[in-house]
Amino acid sequence: MLVNGAGGGAGTFAIQLAARAGAHVTAVDNAGKLDYLSELGADAVVDYRSSDFTRLEPYDLVLDLAAHRSVFACRRTGRRLRVLAVRQGPARFEPAAELCIAGDLRIHIDRTFTLDEVPHALAYVGEGRALGKVVVTP
Image (cartoon, rainbow, N blue to C red; front, side, top):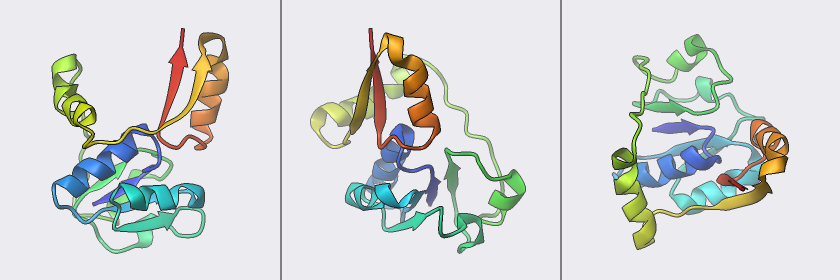
């Protein structure tokens, strides 16, 4: 499995959950995040600034959380393309929450912003600088 945008909040969860399920995980993000992604369970790490993940080996599953590449380029990494739709509601997230409470799923809080700083928080995440979660407090 390849996770593009692996260093963000959803990507760090995806790495850990895939590794727990026994998948071989390749994590793609910027070089500053790669050591942490290895600590989370990524078997291989790729700096997207120096390597094009769509030109690497074929993968059974690609989770593209960054979506900066065209679907045609991503198609080279696997057999078929599908859209992942996540249903809303607390019940969908209870299993992950239970793993967090038990200490089996790590959450990294990169930064905390105030409500007045939401534009800065969005820019920080949008620039790809966040490692893990960014929290906004009221």
